[in-house]
Image 1: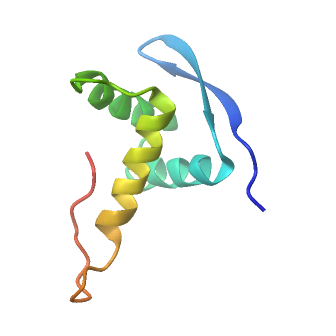
Image 2: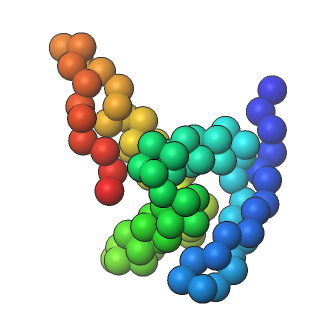
Image 3: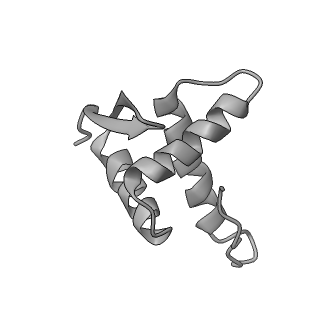
Length: 89
């Protein structure tokens, strides 16, 4: 069963912000932060900086979901069975 969004408060650049994500995305985001040896707030700040730089920035929750999806795609084997080592920055 899919759980609904969970709201958490994260401080980005000294400002608290609330983000609503489904638990599966929170788990994936926490794993990505751990893999990068970053606090969760630092990883979210990086994603937010990329989001703001976009021509038509999406909301932060959407940007996080897309970042996580792109990260998962990059780690998935391609048609030849090779894993693309590139990760979203």
